[in-house]
Length: 456
Image 1 (cartoon, rainbow, N blue to C red):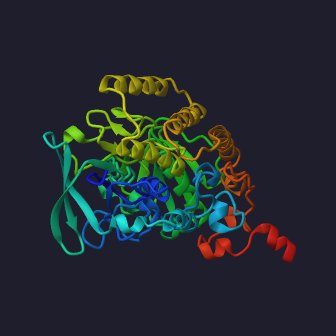
Image 2 (image 1 turned 180 degrees about the vertical axis):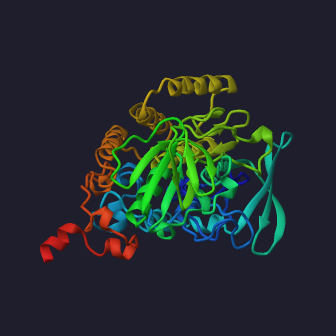
Image 3 (image 1 turned 120 degrees about the horizontal axis):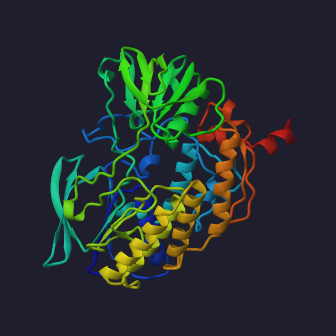
């Protein structure tokens, strides 16, 4: 195994999961391959590594992150908890079920800081091109060290693509939008609600980002929020000040016209229209070509590129499960790269992919989607020694979460859940979410509601 080399593209949650999977073997005294992880930002964490920058970064590269201020988890933390590193272990006390971004980023870093994973990561390094040599069965990777402005090449036996798929915006066009006098941006460049205070805001899209940005802007003082949907509305009961309208047809100055005949003036527009899977460093024969869905075609077990399983993709699915799914994928990928997991033939892999695609096509609603991804996670857990967790209980939490949002889109983050890893019941945050305008870790961890009641 000494002569094997593994390249990992990206040090976000998926790339860090792959590093942690190898470190788990190293902790057992098992020799692991040479590993190099390339991260174009100056720190790990991927999307959770907030930057105020939009457009291009310090070295002129397109900004990767779509993270914004005041983002709080939009799902229970108990649904994403690492099964080998609990929130209890990290924070040494119970916390609420919906932490803000700085708290979740601290948790992500806590596990990886326990290992020597940082020594494997080359920061400020971007992948320019990848090719595969059929004669040597190795990948040649062309890299740019952004800090020194130097280009160089390296070769790897396995390549893990963990670069995410929420960084290249899908930006639609509407007639007349070029003459709209207000600000137009994609959610990728949204960095916080402050700039929209006292403004009439239009969000185009009905995704989770539209829902979250809309509620956040309402919470932080927007005069009104309108969400425009293409096919189906989000469909929750919105408070006064937020509403949904069908798709925009065209713009006329500040006036926006909708397909139901209504029109309204707005101050700003945010396109919450999703992202493209974009891998400009991969040739077409190695590139995953898919839209955002729960089971992309052509990757076996949602991990191995079927035409060349030495090319591994992590975290490419649409997601209910996140951190623990990336872990389950990374553990399976590790075992294949270590030679302890043998993959079936290409034809058998194709049959398995088709089996999952058929199940995917049979889904009818969000509850089916939760069940589908839960079954996928259980399938992965059977293939490796990743510490087991009760997937069925997590699925129940997801379904309760969906119901909580339908009941009240403004208060569902005040609910609490029980960890399937430790059995700990989350505590209520000291301030109701709609009244909490400070998302700092210091404010969040200062005290919890029960402590406040005992000491007041």
